[in-house]
Length: 363
Image 1 (cartoon, helix red, strand yellow):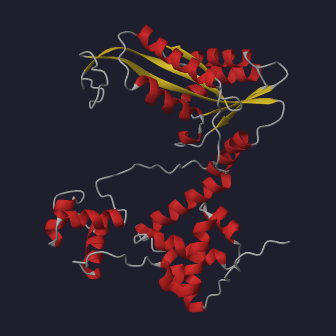
Image 2: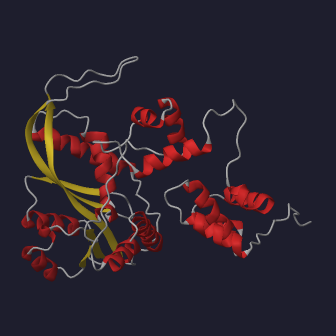
Image 3: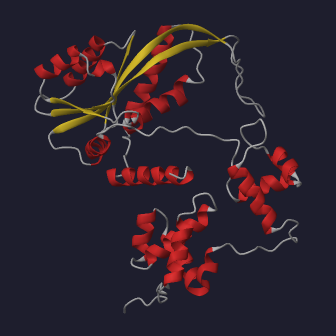
């Protein structure tokens, strides 16, 4: 007997409602949750809940919820209903004024608002300002950096590198290669106090330097295994020596594809001459200022977090041993990193970010 479920409410919108929904999706400096719900409703006009959830990277339950809310209550259904509790002591106009002031102004002589400076300017308590900011996910105290790659071959390089990750060529091995330069052997000025009940590990902020090393690493994309070598410097001849080590680990019948960044040592004449003598090795460069596309950077991040940042090393030899021990543990684990975003998703995300930047600056 076929399964009979609850009938799906179809989304039908008027021209005015469609225009209102489109406006909500473009309001980048207000509540983004409402804009996202508007995008869901617009997508549900032509697609199923499953297809919309996949496209917008959310759950089918979320899509069904806001589709039903819109069908029942139209545009009003996209906004959160007031919850049960004590009567409000602040009006919608005051909340809007605090949000606008937070987004569009800064206090005199300062770069950003705090809860107390905003409370003084708005004539409310700092706890109320904190609740409003948390509700609308405003965080004036935080800042993040970004860099848009100016590489003229950005699209081609992203498709090339991501294609190697998600669909590597047959009869070939793909390596993600990079150098982590100037790793310092730092010894804390006083002994580290270990973790105890009710007390985290403690260490001094000052330290003694005992030199630096450069780490060359090649991540086998298929197996997750890392080939790592510590060198005093990262010159072109050091890089060529590392390439020889990589080639020696691969069967002669297989091609070698190397993903790497645009460091000058990677394009130096000794490297180019070596490539001419070893045609089975092919380089694939990441776009300028896009080292996040190099999968070995994830390994470097874990190495720093789990083996280096909290370490105390009295010599270069001790630092090398710590790096080697982590590499051995990583290789024994045998778990490769999985690249989950397609090139189209990455490029679409970059396009949306560019549109937001243009809208914010009115270009």
